[in-house]
Length: 374
Figure 1: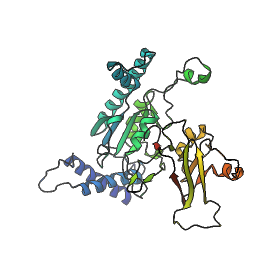
Figure 2: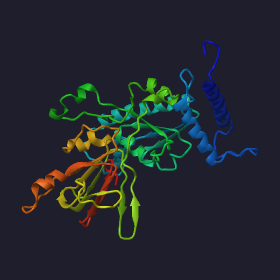
Figure 3: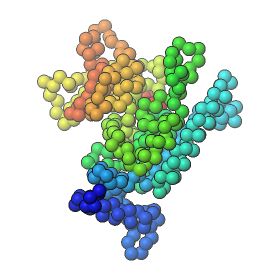
Figure 4: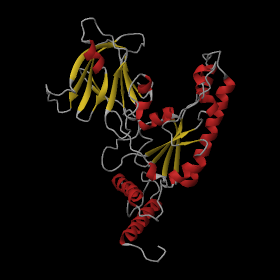
């Protein structure tokens, strides 16, 4: 550029960039496009979005990224809002620290206003939706950046509605987590020994926080931080009944299979099988045994540092790994059981060539996806 010359790659990039921009300006809303000479179909718009994302990945150095034009902001429902509704119904606990809840709600609201203001300044279209009201129709092909404002729980809930990105071309938006009320340093130190717990959101899945969003969020929307985007693998769960089959939302962190009552025994049979359903007696990774326990944890590499680590699992897992980690909770071993075998197989990993099968033998059971979602 300094010499006044441009390479063929830069020239092609500039032409394609101008082409995509001209279409996006001409047809602002593909669902409402009514131009007589060229109606913008869903398929056409999908190709344009793929082209735009390809530009962000392949743009030569020195060229400006076209950034993200359609942004969806997902906002958490704070405890203060939830308890206020219960108070109006006469159901709120009497021992609540209202001033504490109100102060943290105000911090969250201030962060939301900042994020929305920045997004409207940088993007062409901004939609704001509550975490509790979020549904699949909000996260359609029009959205190319989803900003989750809250904590880790809001990021996990938002990720449930993002389509699979297992193909070569990305599907669904990039997710950017913003911790709206992060824990202060003095609140974290010695928290377990204090008389009151003042910790706030950890924000392990958040790339930005209320402290630096004015710097991070604009650059993220402009596409200047695309090099920091990480791909994370999720966990697919299918529940098969005698008459139906249900696919659960993909879990980004972990799932818990257990009886609804934490004090009840969870009875099930656990199998680790090959994906091709061809049993091999020489495969040491295959097994099957009956379990009486408090349930079963299964986590992704992303969730290995969460509840899986707290339950005694291995937290030193590469986040880029595709292996799943499982852990039987409080396994009750009978007097005639092979204790060494049961203890050894109650915790381990499942690679890409195998899968876990759980045959539930209790009358009641639930699958919890990324926390309390069932």
